[in-house]
Image (cartoon, rainbow, N blue to C red; front, side, top):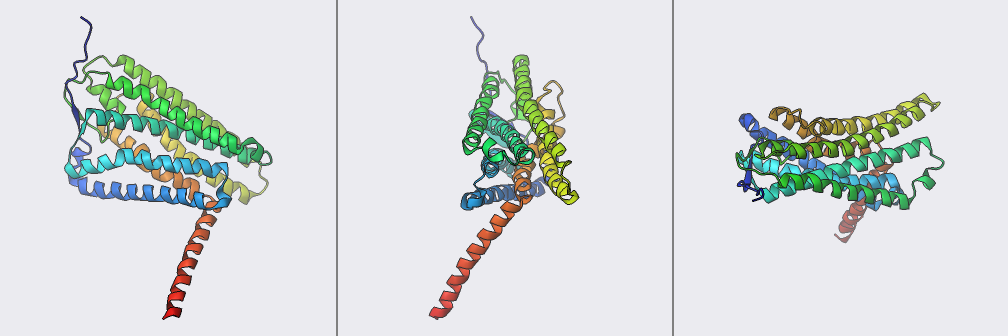
Length: 323
């Protein structure tokens, strides 16, 4: 008789930050505030890009998709985390856990592809400004966005499928604040060597390759910036690109440390701290850095605010005239 799936676990208990019981209320307030800022900020970015015709450029199309992605990416993780902090322990069913795992991997991989694409777009804009319009056409932009999303969707299937096929006989407590790959592999009562190796190979393929392509693009960008004759121009451009690279490095660095070397098991406390960076912090920082460091975007925000305030002012004035 062949081997059968002997899984008896029907739900998992997410322990979250139970080692910080006295800080639960403060952590809830902090994460809720960051989540509110992340969702609100990204919605504003999407709305501004949609309303201003001057922002109908590939760079802002990529930014719009990144903002849309970050809303769903952080919403996959933070609301269950907030529920966990309120209840001091959160039960999640096996199917819901697998669904959260899939969307986490799918959206995280899509972000990697989008960040690499955005770095390539900046490389073309800075290193080939005269040919940028012809090189980064609207058709190519659409194709790159479609490839990024499609590759992310495909990437999410393998880890979630392989994890769902493992046997979970108990215990069912995940010492984490979401259904992440390493703690789930550690809970399995069946041999997970093949799963660990597959996840490692997939992580290297997605994270390391995307990070390498992003890094190469910024190397060419920096070399081009150094050739700018104006010192103020060099500093301004380098400051903007440096901010982008810093946030991208935080995202890739924390992700690589977690998933490229599955045999190097970090302590649960360290894993949680690292996970906070790429699930809570970078969804806020990425769009903020890409938008607030851009003068055209800030000009578009001011224009929309003046228009809205102007309309409001006319209505107020009209009401006084009626009186």
